[in-house]
Every structure is written in structure tokens, then in C-alpha cells.
Length: 112
Image (tube, rainbow, N blue to C red; front, side):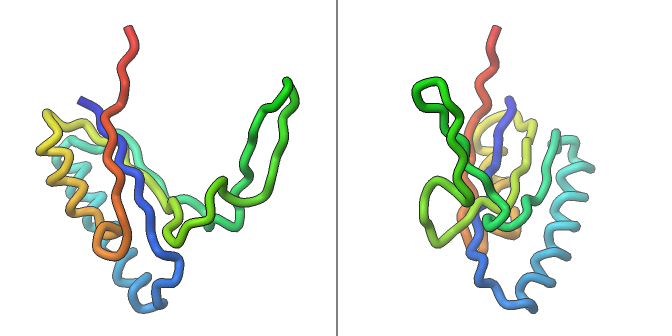
């Protein structure tokens, strides 16, 4: 089963915490790949680069930044192939961002 792990982090991490977390992410990604559970994953540029798009009355309306004001920002994701929710939770708990933020885990809908 496919699971999407959305990684929300506090952008106010210290440079030391960020450097350690980057190293931890490289290690986690390697282990996830070696286990054959990684389908995709990437970090995202800061929320200040975001553009929100809404279509109202047939017209696209764009605004700079995210839709909601929150303390934690979407920082990246992993798409994982796991046999069940328990396995997905076990992997999500190892994502470095879970230590200082939140990892939202969702099963992916398979159409057809």
C-alpha cells in the first residue's frame, strides 16, 4: 500500500539543528531506499516561495504564500510503499522532522 508522509517543520530551527537534521535525512533516505520502501521524496523550498492558486467563477486567482497561517510549514514529503499502516507509522516515526515538527501520514487512494 502507498502512503504519503507530509513533513511539517518549524522554520525557526537553529543552524546547528538544521545541519544535524540534514545529515539525519540523508541517513533515513538511504535506509528507506535500501528497504525498498521509498517511492519518491523531496524537500520543498521555504514557504515564502509558495503561491496559492484558487479558481473562483472560472478565473484563477493567485496569492503569495500558503493558504493558512501556521507555525509549522510543509517542508517536504516521502511517498512510501508499506505493507500496512503499522509499517508506515514505523517509518514515519523515523523521519527526522518528526522530532521537531509533525509528520502527517495518509494512505494514497488507488483508482480503478
